[in-house]
Length: 425
Image (spheres, rainbow, N blue to C red):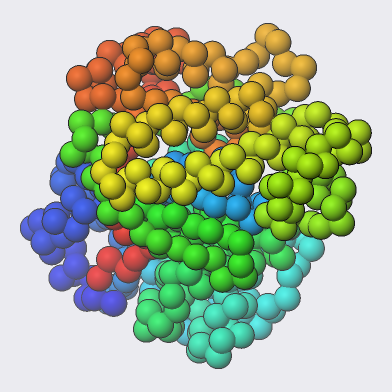
């Protein structure tokens, strides 16, 4: 917490410009100052003047490798990015959490009511209640707070705005009521718990972990406690820029496409009396492939092969980054993209012919890259975004070529943020 008038003066004078550069890369310092000052102003407009205030940030994430592996207790390579949710927050001592997110109605959560509420399923209030309940269960004295939140994480982009929101709530509670004692890993787990139990979505843990821990990380979900390793790597030093391309595809009516991935993999695991593919030895799977085909079907078998190969690929990608073998890393990114398209089959929705936006965007991106760099489907697939590593000398032409077809603003230039969810002060 810092005195509000002093905090404004420090932001305006550039005292935090070095921190902004760390969080946001090459974003102009003036725009960063304006954004954080606007968060303070948004708080005071919503809740009244505050003598002291605290500032928090939680980043979106980009999946670098491990497409659809986390829900099978597999391996993932991910990174936090330079887009984030930020909050200005103040304890209120009322036993209530009140959060106003820019552009949305206010959420009010009574801390005396910590059990899941069926009527909150699928809402941000459910996430707040679920994460707060975990802090209370750890005996932290959460007495309530007011917060104003604003975001530049692109919704529906595969950059995990929902996980960033969960992590933001976690770091606010951690900063205001736990003196920072709760680890980033535990905050990520709290976010997953709230999303699974309170929000009602059976998500994995990759998104929350990448946002909370930050930087480039490899995660192995085989055991109850994920094995996490941070990787020091500067993409800019290798003359490439990370781009996220919004294909403009509609996510509506795709719930069953996403559910079919886990449903079919569950059918494969069922052939062995197990629950997730990580429990099924790869040799046993291939030895039983005729029976798997007969019981679960060919697409399910192909999806399983993707998971096995992608887990190996994540290890190889992480090793390539640690060894600074960027050319090898790009080759593995391309392999991952081909596997997602042909084996996981999460590029084109089943039966779709007129609308194949992600497939078209991938084909165009490969053409614009001219054999350099790499591109692949990003995140859940079927609709939304793809990821590209673009040589800097091709960047202007690449962005122009993508936006000519998919519209202005469809190609987003990213940088990798070296830290996860934080309290700015």
